[in-house]
Amino acid sequence: MKLSENKQKMLRGELYHAFVPELIVDRARCGHACARYNNAGDVSRRRLTELFRDILCDRSALPPPAATPEEDDKLFEDDPWVQFPVNMDYGYNVKLGKNVFINFNATFLDTCKISVGSRTLCGPNVSFYSGTHPLDPVIRQGTKGPELGKEIHVGEDCWIGGNVVILPGVNIGRGSVVGAGSVVTKSVPDFTVVAGNPARVIRKIETAMDPASGELWNGWEEKAIGGAEVPMAEMGGRNEATQTLPEAK
Image 1 (cartoon, one colour):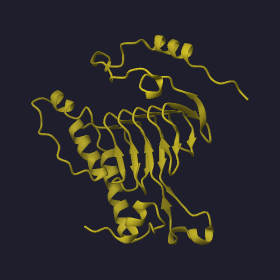
Image 2 (cartoon, one colour; image 1 turned 135 degrees about the vertical axis):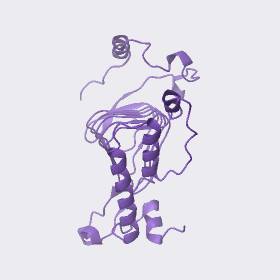
Image 3 (tube, helix red, strand yellow; image 1 turned 90 degrees about the horizontal axis):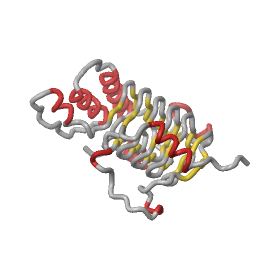
């Protein structure tokens, strides 16, 4: 079906009108889909995946059921894990990669595309705000005036702390970390820790995954995928020994 000019403007990040019948219907559809997901209760991983894909308007077919519930769950082990409740405006503008984890109370104002790369982890109460409004109140006019948006892209292998707000037009580079409670107003380079309001660079992350490190990265070894082989105390000690905060200025 051909998109209306107003909806095309929304997706392009241009001024558009949100309170028109077409987009009101789209938001209502998404709201009902979120409610079904948020109130699903104790259901199978298959059913949760089905309900979540409905929020995103993802019509891709589910794999045929496996012989046992345990085997069936494994069919969806690479699908995103999204704790409910979750809230979105439209759903169809949200794209999540494999093995993404989104903790409870996430909010996606997906006026424009919001993408989260594979293996990225998000704490509770994280908000992705791709929508914004004109500064001039003469143009803004409440629900009668136009609004606009800018895409948000979070790279692969990131860690977004709890209560983080990510504002329109922000790109967060691969492997980066955003400290809890931060408001991210500007794009973040790859393999960087940022924190604060507004978020500022705290340190560079030293990792073999960074091409600039000069180390050869061939991916994770199969035996290490479980993530629990290295005791947390040892990991913490290693991090303290290799990474220090810059001096306060």
